[in-house]
Image (cartoon, rainbow over all chains, first blue to last red; front, top):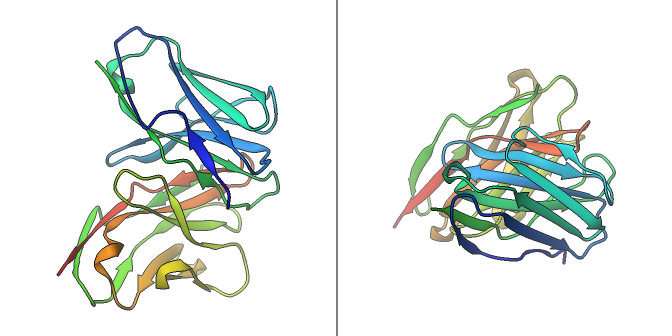
Length: 113
Length: 113
């Protein structure tokens, strides 16, 4: 079974803190994604990556950055956390060929005070 | 740009009753369509997907969905709902250029005993 793990299920941070969310997949997937989930808005794409050291902006990249130093690991970074970044963050991965299924991690619920 | 609309925010059905969740999409080419389910506090699990071929696709947990190109719809159905089906359901279309999913806003299903 494909496994996508996220470093924390719950996080509480203060405004202005730098926050790191880690995602690891064990299926040698090339593609990795970070989504943000908010009630009534579904999931929105923050950043994605096709390969090591590659990254592409999604639909809502402002206030976020990412790092992919190893194929299996994709990190989401909140440079200076703000209260409007309180949300559920979901990581996903898939193979490079078009149409492949995305597999999701359990999510990290982040509260910024 | 592609989009997905799930017109029902919240649906309540009785256990044993049939279920249909609506999904309409907007996409310029042949769509790759997905239904995911999210149980409380969990990540997303794939129920089924449509890439091509037979327009009626079968998924896990007794779910099926029908692709209707003329109506730009991909509705999810189940003939008899179980209490364990209570969850949030998301329809999504694959952006083949970015290999990322565009999600609808979700439908929360409540099952009455």
